[in-house]
Image 1 (cartoon, one colour):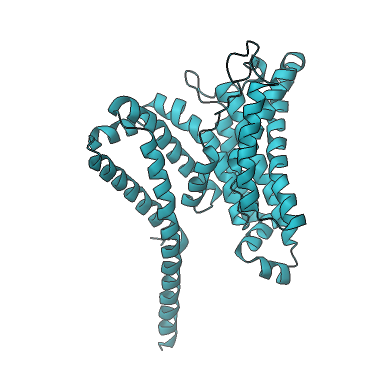
Image 2: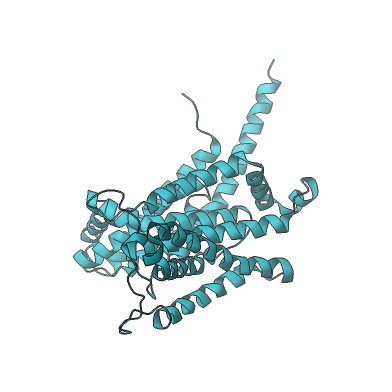
Length: 362
Protein backbone atom coordinates (compact mmCIF):
# COMPACT_ATOMS: atom_id res chain seq x y z
CA UNK A 1 0.00 0.00 0.00
CA UNK A 2 1.37 3.36 -1.01
CA UNK A 3 2.08 5.79 1.84
CA UNK A 4 0.55 9.27 1.32
CA UNK A 5 3.00 12.18 1.05
CA UNK A 6 3.80 13.87 4.34
CA UNK A 7 2.38 17.23 3.21
CA UNK A 8 -0.96 15.70 2.18
CA UNK A 9 -1.06 13.76 5.45
CA UNK A 10 -0.52 16.94 7.47
CA UNK A 11 -3.12 18.82 5.40
CA UNK A 12 -5.72 16.11 5.98
CA UNK A 13 -4.90 15.97 9.68
CA UNK A 14 -5.19 19.75 9.98
CA UNK A 15 -8.61 19.84 8.32
CA UNK A 16 -9.84 16.97 10.50
CA UNK A 17 -8.65 18.66 13.69
CA UNK A 18 -10.21 21.97 12.69
CA UNK A 19 -13.54 20.31 11.84
CA UNK A 20 -13.67 18.44 15.14
CA UNK A 21 -12.70 21.50 17.16
CA UNK A 22 -15.26 23.67 15.35
CA UNK A 23 -18.11 21.27 16.10
CA UNK A 24 -16.93 20.85 19.70
CA UNK A 25 -16.70 24.60 20.24
CA UNK A 26 -20.14 25.15 18.77
CA UNK A 27 -21.59 22.42 20.99
CA UNK A 28 -19.97 23.90 24.10
CA UNK A 29 -21.10 27.43 23.24
CA UNK A 30 -24.70 26.33 22.68
CA UNK A 31 -24.79 24.31 25.89
CA UNK A 32 -23.25 27.17 27.86
CA UNK A 33 -25.96 29.49 26.52
CA UNK A 34 -28.64 27.09 27.75
CA UNK A 35 -29.77 26.06 24.25
CA UNK A 36 -30.58 22.66 22.83
CA UNK A 37 -27.27 21.87 21.14
CA UNK A 38 -28.54 18.67 19.51
CA UNK A 39 -31.53 20.41 17.90
CA UNK A 40 -29.34 23.31 16.76
CA UNK A 41 -26.70 21.11 15.14
CA UNK A 42 -29.40 18.98 13.52
CA UNK A 43 -30.95 22.12 12.02
CA UNK A 44 -27.51 23.28 10.91
CA UNK A 45 -26.96 20.01 9.06
CA UNK A 46 -30.43 19.99 7.49
CA UNK A 47 -30.08 23.56 6.28
CA UNK A 48 -26.67 22.99 4.71
CA UNK A 49 -26.48 19.39 3.52
CA UNK A 50 -29.61 17.60 4.70
CA UNK A 51 -31.48 17.54 1.39
CA UNK A 52 -30.87 17.87 -2.33
CA UNK A 53 -32.59 21.25 -2.39
CA UNK A 54 -30.57 22.53 0.58
CA UNK A 55 -27.33 21.41 -1.08
CA UNK A 56 -28.01 22.80 -4.55
CA UNK A 57 -30.17 25.86 -3.88
CA UNK A 58 -28.49 27.07 -0.70
CA UNK A 59 -25.06 25.61 -0.02
CA UNK A 60 -23.63 25.51 -3.54
CA UNK A 61 -25.14 28.89 -4.40
CA UNK A 62 -23.39 30.43 -1.39
CA UNK A 63 -20.25 28.43 -2.10
CA UNK A 64 -19.81 30.01 -5.54
CA UNK A 65 -18.66 33.48 -4.35
CA UNK A 66 -16.78 31.85 -1.47
CA UNK A 67 -14.78 29.65 -3.85
CA UNK A 68 -13.93 32.56 -6.16
CA UNK A 69 -12.99 34.96 -3.37
CA UNK A 70 -11.17 32.10 -1.65
CA UNK A 71 -9.14 31.60 -4.83
CA UNK A 72 -8.43 35.33 -4.92
CA UNK A 73 -7.09 35.26 -1.37
CA UNK A 74 -5.20 31.99 -1.86
CA UNK A 75 -3.43 33.26 -4.99
CA UNK A 76 -2.39 36.48 -3.31
CA UNK A 77 -1.20 34.76 -0.15
CA UNK A 78 0.77 32.21 -2.17
CA UNK A 79 2.74 35.14 -3.59
CA UNK A 80 3.21 36.77 -0.20
CA UNK A 81 0.74 39.52 -1.13
CA UNK A 82 -1.73 40.21 1.68
CA UNK A 83 -4.88 41.06 -0.23
CA UNK A 84 -7.55 41.57 2.44
CA UNK A 85 -9.75 43.47 -0.01
CA UNK A 86 -11.63 40.67 -1.76
CA UNK A 87 -14.91 41.93 -0.33
CA UNK A 88 -14.44 45.39 -1.82
CA UNK A 89 -13.36 43.92 -5.14
CA UNK A 90 -16.49 41.75 -5.13
CA UNK A 91 -18.66 44.81 -4.47
CA UNK A 92 -17.27 46.88 -7.34
CA UNK A 93 -17.53 43.84 -9.61
CA UNK A 94 -21.19 43.50 -8.70
CA UNK A 95 -21.77 47.23 -9.26
CA UNK A 96 -20.10 47.15 -12.67
CA UNK A 97 -22.10 44.11 -13.78
CA UNK A 98 -25.35 45.70 -12.63
CA UNK A 99 -24.56 48.98 -14.37
CA UNK A 100 -23.76 47.29 -17.69
CA UNK A 101 -26.81 45.01 -17.49
CA UNK A 102 -29.16 47.91 -16.79
CA UNK A 103 -27.63 50.25 -19.35
CA UNK A 104 -27.32 47.91 -22.32
CA UNK A 105 -29.47 44.88 -21.51
CA UNK A 106 -32.26 45.83 -23.90
CA UNK A 107 -30.08 47.05 -26.74
CA UNK A 108 -27.41 44.31 -26.83
CA UNK A 109 -29.62 41.31 -26.14
CA UNK A 110 -27.72 38.13 -25.28
CA UNK A 111 -24.36 39.85 -25.67
CA UNK A 112 -24.96 41.79 -22.46
CA UNK A 113 -24.31 38.79 -20.18
CA UNK A 114 -20.68 38.17 -21.20
CA UNK A 115 -20.16 41.93 -21.28
CA UNK A 116 -21.52 42.27 -17.73
CA UNK A 117 -19.24 39.47 -16.50
CA UNK A 118 -16.27 41.07 -18.23
CA UNK A 119 -17.14 44.39 -16.62
CA UNK A 120 -17.17 42.74 -13.19
CA UNK A 121 -13.78 41.13 -13.79
CA UNK A 122 -12.30 44.40 -15.04
CA UNK A 123 -13.72 46.42 -12.16
CA UNK A 124 -12.37 43.97 -9.56
CA UNK A 125 -8.92 44.00 -11.17
CA UNK A 126 -8.91 47.80 -11.38
CA UNK A 127 -9.92 48.10 -7.72
CA UNK A 128 -7.07 45.81 -6.70
CA UNK A 129 -4.84 47.74 -9.10
CA UNK A 130 -5.14 50.80 -6.86
CA UNK A 131 -3.43 48.85 -4.07
CA UNK A 132 -0.88 47.49 -6.57
CA UNK A 133 0.09 50.99 -7.71
CA UNK A 134 0.32 52.31 -4.16
CA UNK A 135 2.52 49.35 -3.23
CA UNK A 136 4.90 49.63 -6.19
CA UNK A 137 5.16 53.41 -6.44
CA UNK A 138 4.95 54.52 -2.80
CA UNK A 139 5.65 51.39 -0.79
CA UNK A 140 2.25 51.44 0.93
CA UNK A 141 1.42 48.08 2.51
CA UNK A 142 -1.38 46.34 0.64
CA UNK A 143 -2.82 45.12 3.97
CA UNK A 144 -3.75 48.71 4.77
CA UNK A 145 -4.88 49.81 1.32
CA UNK A 146 -7.02 46.75 0.55
CA UNK A 147 -8.81 46.97 3.89
CA UNK A 148 -9.50 50.68 3.43
CA UNK A 149 -10.69 50.11 -0.13
CA UNK A 150 -13.28 47.67 1.25
CA UNK A 151 -14.98 50.54 3.04
CA UNK A 152 -14.70 52.81 0.01
CA UNK A 153 -16.38 50.13 -2.12
CA UNK A 154 -19.09 49.67 0.49
CA UNK A 155 -19.95 53.37 0.47
CA UNK A 156 -19.66 53.51 -3.31
CA UNK A 157 -22.34 50.83 -3.66
CA UNK A 158 -24.47 52.68 -1.07
CA UNK A 159 -24.18 55.83 -3.17
CA UNK A 160 -25.06 54.02 -6.40
CA UNK A 161 -28.20 52.33 -5.04
CA UNK A 162 -29.39 55.64 -3.60
CA UNK A 163 -28.41 57.67 -6.62
CA UNK A 164 -27.53 56.81 -10.24
CA UNK A 165 -28.61 53.16 -10.11
CA UNK A 166 -31.59 53.42 -7.74
CA UNK A 167 -34.80 51.76 -8.87
CA UNK A 168 -37.32 54.06 -10.59
CA UNK A 169 -39.66 54.60 -7.62
CA UNK A 170 -36.75 55.69 -5.38
CA UNK A 171 -38.41 53.88 -2.48
CA UNK A 172 -35.75 51.24 -1.84
CA UNK A 173 -31.93 51.38 -1.68
CA UNK A 174 -31.38 49.03 -4.59
CA UNK A 175 -31.11 49.06 -8.34
CA UNK A 176 -33.80 48.08 -10.79
CA UNK A 177 -34.03 44.38 -11.70
CA UNK A 178 -31.69 43.46 -14.56
CA UNK A 179 -33.31 42.15 -17.77
CA UNK A 180 -33.69 38.42 -18.33
CA UNK A 181 -31.05 38.37 -21.10
CA UNK A 182 -28.45 39.49 -18.55
CA UNK A 183 -29.13 36.59 -16.20
CA UNK A 184 -27.14 33.36 -15.91
CA UNK A 185 -29.06 30.21 -16.86
CA UNK A 186 -29.89 27.68 -14.16
CA UNK A 187 -27.52 24.73 -14.02
CA UNK A 188 -29.98 22.18 -12.56
CA UNK A 189 -33.68 22.57 -13.28
CA UNK A 190 -35.81 23.09 -10.21
CA UNK A 191 -32.97 24.61 -8.18
CA UNK A 192 -31.34 28.03 -7.80
CA UNK A 193 -27.89 26.73 -8.76
CA UNK A 194 -26.54 28.67 -11.74
CA UNK A 195 -23.65 28.18 -14.16
CA UNK A 196 -21.46 30.46 -12.07
CA UNK A 197 -20.70 27.45 -9.88
CA UNK A 198 -19.16 25.71 -12.89
CA UNK A 199 -17.14 28.86 -13.59
CA UNK A 200 -15.79 28.75 -10.03
CA UNK A 201 -14.77 25.10 -10.42
CA UNK A 202 -13.04 25.82 -13.73
CA UNK A 203 -11.21 28.78 -12.19
CA UNK A 204 -9.91 26.57 -9.37
CA UNK A 205 -8.67 23.86 -11.74
CA UNK A 206 -7.03 26.38 -14.07
CA UNK A 207 -5.32 28.14 -11.16
CA UNK A 208 -4.00 24.84 -9.81
CA UNK A 209 -2.58 23.97 -13.24
CA UNK A 210 -1.00 27.40 -13.70
CA UNK A 211 0.63 27.35 -10.27
CA UNK A 212 2.05 23.85 -10.69
CA UNK A 213 2.83 23.59 -14.40
CA UNK A 214 3.76 27.00 -15.76
CA UNK A 215 6.67 29.42 -15.46
CA UNK A 216 4.32 32.12 -14.22
CA UNK A 217 3.12 29.81 -11.46
CA UNK A 218 6.70 29.02 -10.51
CA UNK A 219 7.46 32.71 -10.18
CA UNK A 220 4.43 33.19 -7.94
CA UNK A 221 5.47 30.31 -5.69
CA UNK A 222 9.10 31.43 -5.62
CA UNK A 223 8.20 34.98 -4.62
CA UNK A 224 5.82 33.72 -1.95
CA UNK A 225 8.37 31.37 -0.40
CA UNK A 226 11.29 33.80 -0.38
CA UNK A 227 11.11 37.05 -2.30
CA UNK A 228 14.78 37.96 -1.73
CA UNK A 229 16.01 34.56 -2.89
CA UNK A 230 13.73 34.72 -5.94
CA UNK A 231 15.07 38.15 -6.79
CA UNK A 232 18.73 37.17 -6.43
CA UNK A 233 18.84 33.60 -7.70
CA UNK A 234 16.02 33.51 -10.19
CA UNK A 235 16.24 37.11 -11.38
CA UNK A 236 12.52 37.49 -10.85
CA UNK A 237 10.97 40.94 -10.82
CA UNK A 238 9.24 40.60 -7.46
CA UNK A 239 7.35 43.90 -7.73
CA UNK A 240 5.94 42.96 -11.13
CA UNK A 241 4.86 39.51 -9.93
CA UNK A 242 3.16 41.02 -6.87
CA UNK A 243 1.38 43.59 -9.00
CA UNK A 244 0.10 41.01 -11.47
CA UNK A 245 -1.04 38.73 -8.67
CA UNK A 246 -3.05 41.55 -7.14
CA UNK A 247 -4.72 42.24 -10.48
CA UNK A 248 -5.66 38.59 -11.03
CA UNK A 249 -6.80 38.28 -7.42
CA UNK A 250 -9.04 41.31 -7.84
CA UNK A 251 -10.38 39.95 -11.12
CA UNK A 252 -11.47 36.71 -9.44
CA UNK A 253 -13.23 38.59 -6.65
CA UNK A 254 -14.84 40.91 -9.21
CA UNK A 255 -16.12 37.89 -11.11
CA UNK A 256 -17.69 36.63 -7.88
CA UNK A 257 -19.61 39.91 -7.57
CA UNK A 258 -20.73 39.82 -11.19
CA UNK A 259 -22.00 36.26 -10.78
CA UNK A 260 -23.98 37.26 -7.69
CA UNK A 261 -25.82 39.96 -9.63
CA UNK A 262 -26.39 37.94 -12.80
CA UNK A 263 -27.07 34.61 -11.12
CA UNK A 264 -28.60 35.19 -7.68
CA UNK A 265 -29.92 38.64 -6.76
CA UNK A 266 -30.63 40.06 -10.28
CA UNK A 267 -30.18 43.51 -8.77
CA UNK A 268 -27.59 45.52 -6.88
CA UNK A 269 -28.22 45.83 -3.14
CA UNK A 270 -26.35 47.74 -0.49
CA UNK A 271 -25.65 44.54 1.46
CA UNK A 272 -25.19 42.22 -1.52
CA UNK A 273 -22.14 40.71 0.19
CA UNK A 274 -22.63 39.39 3.73
CA UNK A 275 -18.85 39.41 4.13
CA UNK A 276 -17.87 36.84 1.50
CA UNK A 277 -14.45 38.44 1.08
CA UNK A 278 -13.67 38.11 4.78
CA UNK A 279 -14.94 34.53 5.05
CA UNK A 280 -12.74 33.83 2.02
CA UNK A 281 -9.66 34.25 4.23
CA UNK A 282 -10.78 31.31 6.36
CA UNK A 283 -11.69 29.37 3.20
CA UNK A 284 -8.22 29.89 1.73
CA UNK A 285 -6.34 29.19 4.96
CA UNK A 286 -8.25 26.00 5.75
CA UNK A 287 -7.50 24.79 2.21
CA UNK A 288 -3.78 25.38 2.79
CA UNK A 289 -3.89 27.94 -0.07
CA UNK A 290 -4.43 25.06 -2.49
CA UNK A 291 -6.84 26.00 -5.33
CA UNK A 292 -8.51 22.58 -5.52
CA UNK A 293 -8.78 22.49 -1.73
CA UNK A 294 -10.59 25.84 -1.87
CA UNK A 295 -13.48 24.08 -3.63
CA UNK A 296 -14.01 21.77 -0.66
CA UNK A 297 -13.61 24.45 2.00
CA UNK A 298 -15.80 26.87 0.03
CA UNK A 299 -18.58 24.29 -0.02
CA UNK A 300 -18.03 23.62 3.69
CA UNK A 301 -18.37 27.28 4.63
CA UNK A 302 -21.27 27.67 2.21
CA UNK A 303 -23.00 24.87 4.08
CA UNK A 304 -22.23 26.48 7.43
CA UNK A 305 -23.72 29.80 6.35
CA UNK A 306 -26.79 28.17 4.80
CA UNK A 307 -27.24 25.96 7.85
CA UNK A 308 -26.92 28.96 10.15
CA UNK A 309 -30.10 30.43 8.70
CA UNK A 310 -31.94 27.14 9.21
CA UNK A 311 -30.57 26.91 12.74
CA UNK A 312 -31.93 30.36 13.50
CA UNK A 313 -35.30 29.54 11.96
CA UNK A 314 -35.82 26.02 13.35
CA UNK A 315 -33.93 26.05 16.66
CA UNK A 316 -34.03 29.72 17.59
CA UNK A 317 -30.23 29.98 17.66
CA UNK A 318 -28.83 33.28 16.31
CA UNK A 319 -27.04 32.82 12.99
CA UNK A 320 -24.19 34.97 14.27
CA UNK A 321 -23.07 31.98 16.36
CA UNK A 322 -21.74 30.37 13.18
CA UNK A 323 -19.82 33.56 12.36
CA UNK A 324 -18.15 33.30 15.75
CA UNK A 325 -17.24 29.68 15.02
CA UNK A 326 -15.76 30.73 11.66
CA UNK A 327 -13.60 33.32 13.44
CA UNK A 328 -12.43 30.69 15.90
CA UNK A 329 -11.60 28.40 12.98
CA UNK A 330 -9.22 31.05 11.62
CA UNK A 331 -7.45 31.26 14.99
CA UNK A 332 -7.22 27.47 15.20
CA UNK A 333 -5.78 27.33 11.69
CA UNK A 334 -3.11 29.86 12.58
CA UNK A 335 -2.15 27.82 15.64
CA UNK A 336 -2.13 24.56 13.68
CA UNK A 337 -0.03 26.14 10.93
CA UNK A 338 2.70 26.66 13.51
CA UNK A 339 2.21 23.11 14.72
CA UNK A 340 2.33 21.80 11.15
CA UNK A 341 5.62 23.54 10.59
CA UNK A 342 7.06 21.93 13.70
CA UNK A 343 5.59 18.54 12.77
CA UNK A 344 6.97 18.76 9.23
CA UNK A 345 10.40 19.56 10.59
CA UNK A 346 10.19 16.64 13.00
CA UNK A 347 9.16 14.25 10.24
CA UNK A 348 12.01 15.48 8.06
CA UNK A 349 14.53 14.98 10.85
CA UNK A 350 13.17 11.52 11.59
CA UNK A 351 13.26 10.58 7.92
CA UNK A 352 16.78 11.94 7.61
CA UNK A 353 17.90 10.06 10.71
CA UNK A 354 16.32 6.88 9.50
CA UNK A 355 18.01 7.19 6.12
CA UNK A 356 21.36 7.72 7.81
CA UNK A 357 20.95 4.69 9.98
CA UNK A 358 19.92 2.56 7.01
CA UNK A 359 22.84 3.88 5.02
CA UNK A 360 25.23 2.86 7.78
CA UNK A 361 24.08 -0.72 7.66
CA UNK A 362 26.31 -3.16 5.76
